Length: 129
Image 1 (spheres, one colour):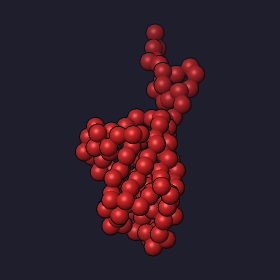
Image 2: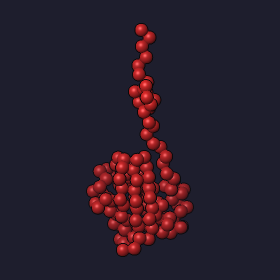
Image 3: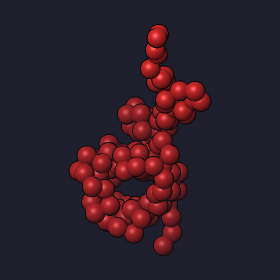
Image 4: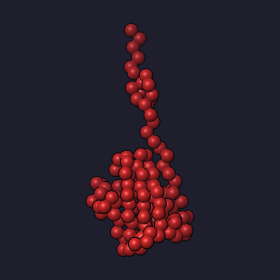
């Protein structure tokens, strides 16, 4: 089957490769149905927001390969990837997706732990005596 659009989505450590094909609205994530893959309905809703906004609920089949990070990060990566792929399929989707901020990569990452400290910012307890 021919891919209409391809998009790469990223969020935290998660990376999603999204392939959009003609179909009846079936979304498959890593070989499973989207509702079976993501544990909470909030994550499913987050991942499918771009389709709802553009009104393409039952137009395309979407195949997603996602790896890295946690489940919420993966859902965010799926949203980003679907948004990018939808703009590739139809340029008129761009304005709605851009207005909702779905095309912007969420650049927030975990800050690295510094040496001589307990965490990224947390210091060891100070003892005067």
